[in-house]
Image 1 (tube, rainbow, N blue to C red):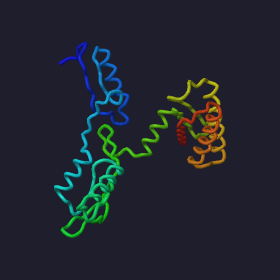
Image 2 (image 1 turned 180 degrees about the horizontal axis):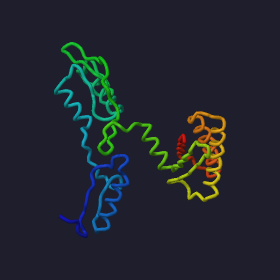
Image 3 (image 1 turned 90 degrees about the horizontal axis):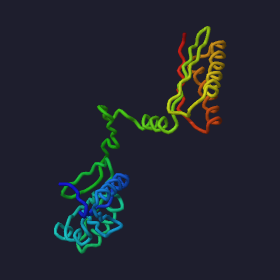
Amino acid sequence: MAIKPGDTVILSSSPIPGNEEAVNRVINRLYALGAYVLYPPTYKVHASGHASQEELKLILNLTTPRFFLPWHGEVRHQTNFKWLAESMSHPPEKTLIGENGALYRLTRETFEKVGEVPHGVLYVDGLGVGDITEEILADRRHMAEEGLVVITALADEEPVVEVISRGFVKAGEKLLGEVRRMALEALKNGVREKKPLERIRDDIYYPVKKFLKKATGRDPMILPVVIEG
């Protein structure tokens, strides 16, 4: 089935937050095909998939739960459902608002929280499941937004420094040359004073970071790699 000029398309659901751009693209493509598109909030065509208060009351009257755990939706929805249940002529004896990871025990006489189980966001990246941490995601965002500058330094009798930038500004030779000069100076001082490689790396990192921030207004990820010759 294909959309033809003059067809009418009704989108009765509201976009999930974060999907607005994708939904707008679909609407624009439908218009481009010549269709009339009715969508909320421009048109009052929204049809909720959730029960109304009267329907919820009917369920509560039919089931008359002794213990009650409203679960669907966000905390605000669960809390309003709790208040609704407590306003009934036969309210539950006990109502709990669930928490992610919480472990509850339900018996004939009791309903209570008894502990927690491991929980949280599990990030799936390609074939890897759960091996991408928040720190790694933060590094990716940093590189995507600010770029990367790699400084390779050879700590030898004749120190050598190479500088490579990716996703940074269109760095001219003057800018990278100054980074190279600063790194080489820190490297020579470190070799002469027989500093640990970690100390030399810090002596390169912080001055270069400060210089690039001042010179470009950007804060790229700086990766100094110091190799012993």
